[in-house]
Image 1 (cartoon, rainbow, N blue to C red):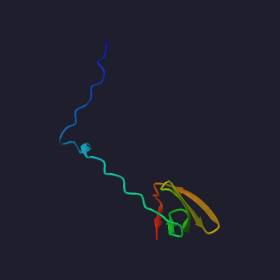
Image 2: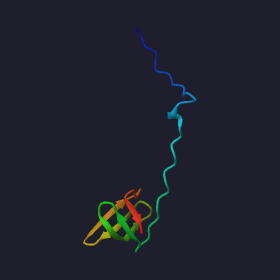
Image 3: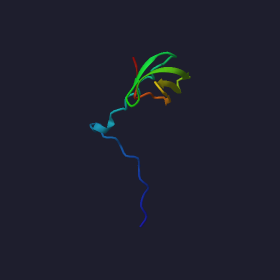
Image 4: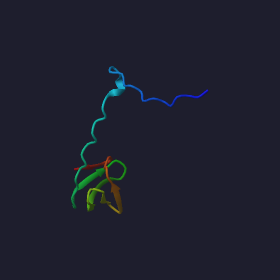
Length: 76
């Protein structure tokens, strides 16, 4: 027996799964010398910015490059 290919399913009007996804929050913009806090590394200072792609942060003795989106990085 041959099976018919799966047809596109019609969305039911009352389905809770028809909720549109919310847009992502806007990226936070950092500049050199901003004070920041990271969930894992603690307090730090921005020492470099790569055009909304990543920031270089100094956390005392360690420097880390943190890529966008900066979910665990908060500007103070």
